[in-house]
Structure formats: structure tokens, C-alpha cells
Image (cartoon, rainbow, N blue to C red; front, side, top):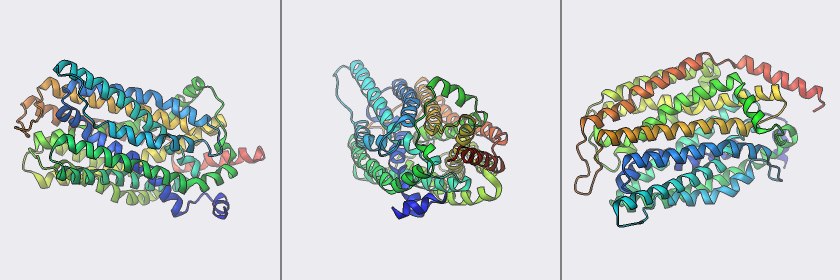
Amino acid sequence: MNNSANESVSEKLNLKTKVAYGAGDLGPAITANILIFYLSPFLTDVAGLNPSLAGQTQLIGKVWDAVNDPMVGVMSDKTRSRLGRRYPWILAGAVPFGFFFFLQWIVPKFSDNAGSQQWGLFWYYTFISIVLGWLYTVVNLPYTAMTPEMTQDYDERTSLNSFRFAFSIGGSILSLILVGLISSRFPNLSDRYVAIGIVCGVLSVLPLFWCVWGTFDRMKAVGLQHPEAEMPVSIPIVQQLKIAFSNGPFLFVVGIYLCSWLSFQLTAAIIPYFVASVMRLNDAWAVPSVVLAVQLTAMLMLPVWNQLSHRIGKRGVYFAGMVLWIIAQGGLFFLQPGQMTLMYTLAVMSGFGVSVAYLIPWSMLPDVIELDELRTGQRREGIFYSFVTFLQKVCLGVAVAVVLQQLGNAGYVPPTDAVPLPVQPESVLLAIRSSIGPVPTVALLIGMVLTYFYPITKDVHTQIRLQLSERKRDQGQ
């Protein structure tokens, strides 16, 4: 309890608290990374769904997942318990979350008729996608909403996010290593994905309990020092929506976030097809090694970008990372089979930009929330974070569905045991190259324009914090 008392007088966080908070994103990162990179090829190449149905089942799951985000965000904001607003959700959802992740990789038999089997699998994976997405929201959205509650210091929030995303990227890296190791031991694709579901399902649950245990004292101290942070939100949801979308800086952050993450998720969805069909690589480590080059670079660059943000600001860091990322995406469009060194060089360059996409938009969001608090008198972290994730998931669902629909229309040839690396038509290769090159590049350029006009600088944030402090003094808090 002494630690809590000491922390309650300072906005600086100790290392134990930062590490425990960061650990909360480890499990969701493991599952999300595997779903992004491997769910589409699993559905088309292992479960046997045609690309169109595989895209539709993910789109339905993501849209419903997005719809429930604001609902969970609002209910999280309104929750009252002796554990606070956020912890009950994380604790209740952790184990079911891991279990439904495992169910995602099962291929049930519904019928001997090919058409009936297709639709049986479609509805099975749609149901699993809906429930798994909801459980992901239950554990992850309240977790992300804790960021502005743990500290109100401008630079300390960037530091806290660097710990979060170090674990997030670390989880992504760990998932890829596990996939590579499991793939080496299980040559049969069905057995391989079942093993991935079991191992990664278990590993996705445990860090969530670590996060709750390691941050509880800090959150309790914050509740005592800033009781407004634990007050349930009383504004009706329709009015909350109007206020949120009348917040200009919030719309900028949403646009910046969507542009960078649309680029990342579109590339992630197509990279297994790019490695196999364009680069003609069929080794178990082919996809993991490329993605590892991106994620390792992103993780190593987090502390570098964090320090640079103190000197040149969030806007300058975002520009630097995006320029390198745009060059990399353009290079991938022209890459040819056999150019292995260039492929890994471009992957490393992409990692510089991906690291910025992890760090900067999320560190902007707490500043927007405090501007909202200044205007409304209430803290509504859940509703703001839920809208960002709402749009992210819709964007991901649409991107994956469009990519898979294009592959299906272009005549994608799935691999078989007899032909594990089929030669694809030129129309398929063009669809893959377009999805990994021009489309992400345009999105990144739009994000840079939005960042240039983003209005909350460090000086503006200082003024917001000063006005909030003066208001609290006037109210006797």
C-alpha cells in the first residue's frame, strides 16, 4: 500500500507498473497476429472455403465485432465495482477468449456434399469469428482505456505506450516463432493449425492476469487521487456520439490511425499469398521470417522513436517513419522471385514505419480524451477507444474481404498435397501486387497529410492540462 501512496503523488510510473501494463497486450497480440497473417490461408487452403466465402465470413465477424465495441466501451465506462471499471471485464473474458481462439482452427465435418459442407463451414467460422471478436473486445478494449487513467503526463503516456507496444510486437514475434516451430514439427496442415490453436490459446490468457495483478495498486492510487477517473459516465450514448464526432482532433486521430493500420493489415492479409505465389517460396519459415524482419525492427525502433518524440514531437516522428514505409511498400510491388536480400531489406524498412504506427496514433488519443474532458467535464476513455477499434475492425474486415474476393475473381488456385505451390494466373499475381503496393502507399500518404494538420501539439496539451487543473482547484478537488 505504501507503493500506491507514493505513486499517487506523482504522474511518473515505476518500471514494475509499466511492464505489467505492457504485458496486457501480449496475449491479444499473439492471437491477433496469427489471425491477421494466417486465418485467410487457413480458410482457403486448409478448411477448403472458396476465397469469396472466406472473405465474407471474416467481414461479417469484423463488422459485428466493430458494432459491439462501442457497446462494451460504454458499459465499461459505466461499470462500478470494487475492482474499478476495467478489471471485471478483463478477468471475466480471459479464459473464454483463449478457448474460442482454439475453436477457430478446427475443421468440422458437416456433410459429404461439397456445397453443404461449404455453407456449414461458412456459418461455423462466422459464429466463431463473432464470438471470438466479442471476447477480444471484452479483454482488450477496457485494457487500452486504462492508458489515460494511469498517468496524465504527456511524455509519460508515450513511454507507457512504448512498453505496451513492445509487448504487443513481442507477442507478434513470439507467435511467428511458435508458428515456425510448430510448422516444422507438423507437416500436415490440419494438425499444424490445431497445435497452433492450443499453444497460442493458452499463452493468450496468462498475461492478462499478470496485467491485472501488476497494475492494481497503481489504478487504486489513481482512483483515490483522481476520483473523476472512476466516476461512471452519465451522458446518454447518443449525446456521447455527437460529442465525440464534434471533437475535431479526435477525427484527425481516427484518420491517421486508420490510414496507417489499413496499410499494415492489408499487407498482412496478402503477405502469405505474396510469399508463396509471387516469390515462389514454400518453406515452413518463409512467411514467419519475412514478418519477423518487420516486427523485430518495429520493436527495436520503439524506444528510438519514443526518445525522438521528446525532441521533434509526435508529428516529426510520424513523418520520418512513414517516408521509409512508403518506399518499402512501393518496392514490394516491383519485387521479383529470387530477390531475397531486397525482400528482407524492404521488410526491415517497413518495420520502421510499423513501429511508428504502433506508437504515435495511440499516444495522441489520450490527449484528445482530455480535450473532451475539458469540454464535457467527464472522462470517457471507453467510448473514444471503442470508436477507434470499431473503425479499425470494419476497415480490416472490408480490406480482407476485398482482397480475397479479388483473388477468387482472378482465378486463385489453392495448393494441394500433390501441388503445394501451384502457378497462379497473371491476373492473380497482379491482384496480389496491387494489394501490397499502390493501395497501402496511397493510404499512408493520406495519413501524412492528416498528421500535418493535427492540432494538438505539446504546447496545446500543456494548456489543456493547465485548464483542467484550474477547474479542479475551483471545484475544490
